[in-house]
Image (tube, rainbow, N blue to C red; front, side, top):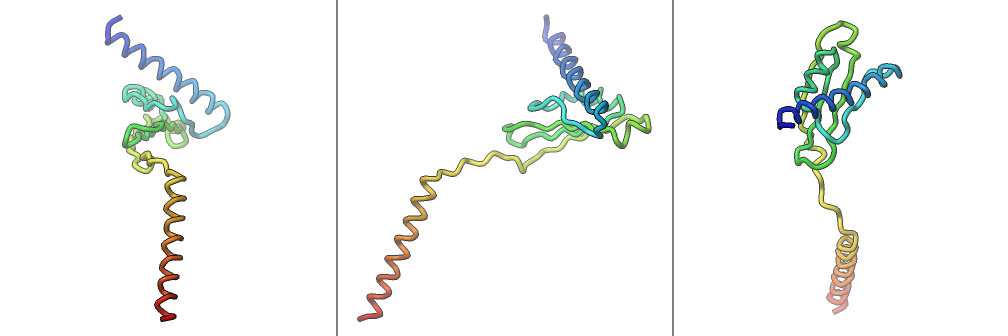
Length: 129
């Protein structure tokens, strides 16, 4: 299998999986659903879904970490028989943040309290002299 065939197979698999999720959601009475969790839809797949009358919104994470979001809706387009829209959004609000080190925060808090006590003690010593 060459690279072109491998890519086409990957596109077809993603499209088939997305359409299965969409069909389940339509049958369940939903007006939108998420498809292909964790990976952004290939642009070709998003276009194929839109050709079927679905709106596709692909949210990409700015730093590449975390899951992407692929939301497909049909409330506005399916009833009109029109081609859906494909929208790409870069989500900067989901940037990964370094984890807070609880021990470090605790030691900073304790040191701050110690310094406050020391400042009060020195202030009282000056006032008594």
